Amino acid sequence: MPTPTLADIKFQEGDALYQQHRLAEAIACYDQTLALDSGHMMALYMRGAALFQLRHLDAAADSLHAALRLAPDYAPAHNILGVVLSGLGHSEAALESYNTAIRLKPIFASPYINRSLILRHQGRFEESLASLDRALALAPNNPNAHSNRGSLLTEMNQPAAAIPSLTRALQINPAMPFLPGIRVLNKMFLCDWSNFDAELADLSARIARGEPAAPTWSLVGLLDSADLQRKAAEIWTAMECPENPALGPLPAHPRPKDISQGRIRLGYYSADFHRHATAYLIAELFECHDRSKFEVIAFSFGPQNGDDMQKRIIAACDRYVDVTTRTDREVAALSREMEIDIAVDLKGLSGGHRLGIFAHRAAPIQVAYLGYPCTLGAPYIDYLIADNTIIPDASRHFYTEKIVNLPNSYQVNDRKRKVGDQVFTRTELGLPDSGFVFCCFNNHYKITPATFNAWMRILKAVEGSVLWLLSEDPAAAANLRREAQTRGVDPSRLVFAGRTQPEEHLARHQVADLFLDTLPYNAHTTASDALWVGLPVLTCPGETFPSRVAASLLTALDMPEMIAPAMAAYEALAVQLAKEPERLAAVRQKLARNRATSPLFDTDLFTRNIEAAYIEMRG
Image (cartoon, rainbow, N blue to C red):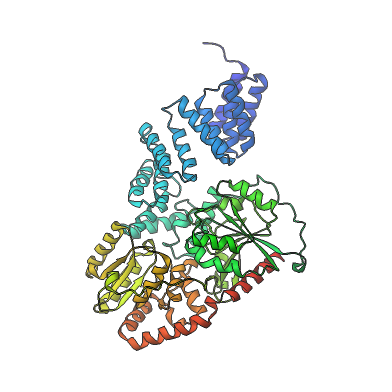
């Protein structure tokens, strides 16, 4: 056995420090190794790995490239280089590194797992799933492969397939971050409420202790606690999307502060500039912005399908920039180059978000609005746009952002939304010819056992009534019917509507009698849909932003009588309106009057209000 050289001894010392996660000391030892032996490939490799863990990505890439020049067939170095390149935003180069690692060592599971993340980010879901399945064939007990598979299937809207993968990952490693919350959310997609109270109590307790038990977006419809939502957001953002200094400090804009001397350059960022709820709400705002004071630029990182809403938004903006293929860092750099004054994130942490753009600091002022009804827990988001109903002064401390409360409601609306001309019959929609029709067209993951219990008591109290819900998932519909049966309600009294074109969906609202809201995740755009076509909405506000949106809309319509102070009052009012046709008719008449005159659907007024907020933010 050859005698170890001094370089080898220093390398072994560095390895011991690396195993103890004393990374800076380990790097110092690797540097000493390389000073003694510049061709020590393993020192270069491990140095790159340690630099990566310290997030010194450029230096890590240099070290790994140097290692690969000495040993071009070393698969682990190609794999870690791929991870580093991915962190730098070089997706295609990362993919090439993973593919090289796989070619060199086909039985190596890790690059298959890492490759799947790139493919998933590119929207190549089936290829991503195949890569994970190959990793699991090689390493059946790899918790990361099971975890990523479950998260991918969640994104693919396949909750029944996602749950077993998430469950298996937690069986192998119960400490895996965020998976318990993602698993519960998938159960909510299926309306599977087994063990609901115990799982929710466990999530709440773990978040209160500061544990990463659930991503904040999985809790929006579960917890009516603004305190826990803030804690969950701060935990997730710190771990998954912390502030990124890669672009350096934001240079000062050589732009006049006096609005009369130059327009404020607004950047709106979203994946939803197409036929999507966000676009349906915000399109007219873009059209109404005062072009003497504001320049409107849309940054789109979603589908570029050219549908009617996308064409309308493109026409409404001064510039429309497709940044789908650009990295977060590149989009932030482009925003700086374009001298965006105020960057408005319309996604938050909803599906397809790109919070990393704002972690790089895209603009001097960064604002969260409309797409995500919670705090982001991110120190780089400066403002959150809300209103006094959604965030009363006493609740501001639950939000990491400065709160800008608009007059009336925070929610913008589009007066140009078209309602289909078709007059539907009950028979066409699968509804009974007679009897009261309660409805809720919220996504069914918003339905909690407590809300459903209230609905079933209402149905029992109103003979011949039905509950009209929106669901295209046979498993969710079957579970809801089973839950009705266990509560003594004939399952046939639940009627399910499929999805259809937006105009037809609005038109069919007119067959319903009363919209019953969900708690703690209210109807948002869905409530505006109902009110726009004259369907009364009954809500019960909670403590959190998502639980107070319907109350905000009704307040702006001057209809406080439809805001119940507690669930018992909510149930009682629903029953009264169903049994007293004259009272319901009076509510409908008031809604019809107020719809035409109230601030909720006055887009010009809303535009002036939000513009005043932007001007105040800019100072």
